[in-house]
Amino acid sequence: MLRSTPLVTDEIYHIFNRGAHKQAIFTSVEDYRRFQIGLHLANHSKSVLVRDVLEAQKYREPFSGYPADKSLVNVLAYSLMPNHFHLVLRQKSDEGITRFMKKVGVGYSMYFNIKYGHSGTLLQGPFKSSHVDTDPYHKWLFAYVHLNPVSIAEPEWKEKGIKDTQRAQKFLSGYRWSSYFDYYTSQRPERAILAHEEGIQHIEKQKDIQALLASYGHGRILHPSLEGVKKIE
Image 1 (tube, helix red, strand yellow):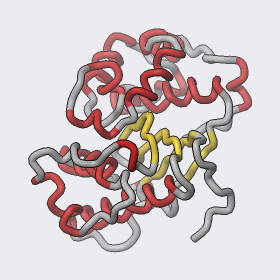
Image 2 (cartoon, rainbow, N blue to C red; image 1 turned 45 degrees about the vertical axis):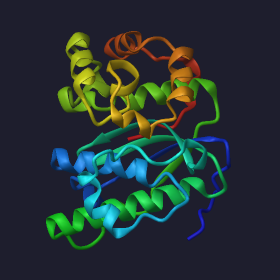
Image 3 (tube, rainbow, N blue to C red; image 1 turned 30 degrees about the horizontal axis):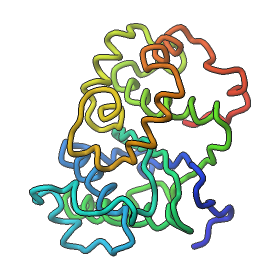
């Protein structure tokens, strides 16, 4: 099915989706890890085999094997939450994001349905996308995606601010289901998911994460131009 608004090659997009009826789509460590592996395996023009979907976690080195120059997208940031996920992607070829997301979605849904005996739709329809068309929007979005897991520790942080920034910082530093870990904590095999060299440039263009946490914690607006940015739930 063609999208009403085509995604433009070499542009950056915020991609997000959630479980149908807001149901949980990640209920175990294995689920989160399987989705991470899918982000790597799907980012190539090759088809993903059923065997790959079902046995991905048995691979000795699941985050190796595909050269970056053959990827469909550059994954700049991501965050996986119990019932939804956020990705920041740069499209590298025509329909690259659509092809990538189809493989990620089909592969993970197949895994989930077999593991849990689930039937019916897992995700809430096609993925949603938002064009990142201004520099302030991009800086805000990069921080938003990485701060999203704070909702697990402080569910009302978006409305009331972060009460304890040190606690939030510690929580994020240990949250393994986000690219925050790869940019701010330590190196690990999962870093292969990212176009890390491009992504780190965006980190350098904005304030460090503690300054962003402080801005959220005090309820300040990060940049005046963001008042026109559509709020993403």
